[in-house]
Image (cartoon, rainbow, N blue to C red; front, side):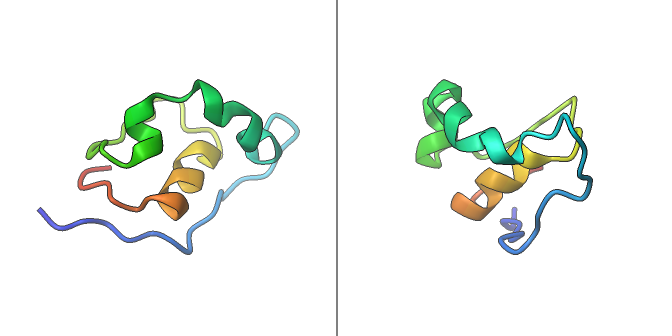
Length: 66
């Protein structure tokens, strides 16, 4: 399966509850597999603006299935 390259993508909605500015603080709570790039599938059932997804797609962009 081909990898998806979305390295230039960014959150598509902006609102008061968005997490973009807080992501650096949240990273310590994310699973190690997400941080080290070994996670191949990414599912986010409550996408919101997609801040977490777009943060990691820029850092890692190795997801085979999104």
